Length: 154
Image (cartoon, rainbow, N blue to C red; front, side, top):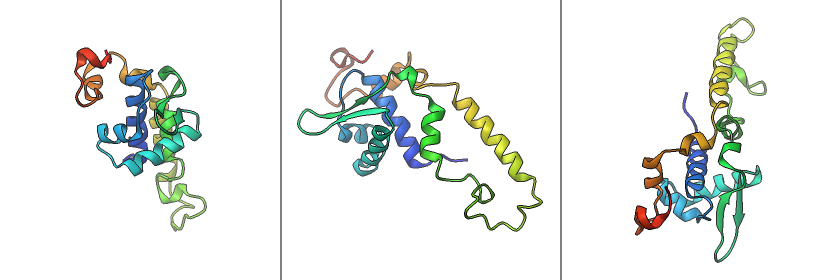
């Protein structure tokens, strides 16, 4: 199993915003800190904002910030949001399944069970769990040219 780039960027963006809260961040700064293209991060930010995870403000002095407290953002919920359109296997895609084994194959049930366990595990965690007492992560998100003493991230 492998998460899509968009899911990965969504989690990175949320962790960055949470670790720097209550600051408002620029999408370009998030992209740089996450080693990602501005365009990809901007798409993810738009989807996170549309689903109530981020607040965005345009223009000079604008940026992005969490719309909810980090302990109110479930990791499983975010992963489902970005992975929902991509079936794990062809047989799990009712509209495009062409597998000739579907009627007799038991693998589908096993895959569904495994995915259920995967999401059940992620559902136990929030963005708060990812950033709480994680000084190494906070140091990664210190803005360029700042130091830990004047970045107020700890």
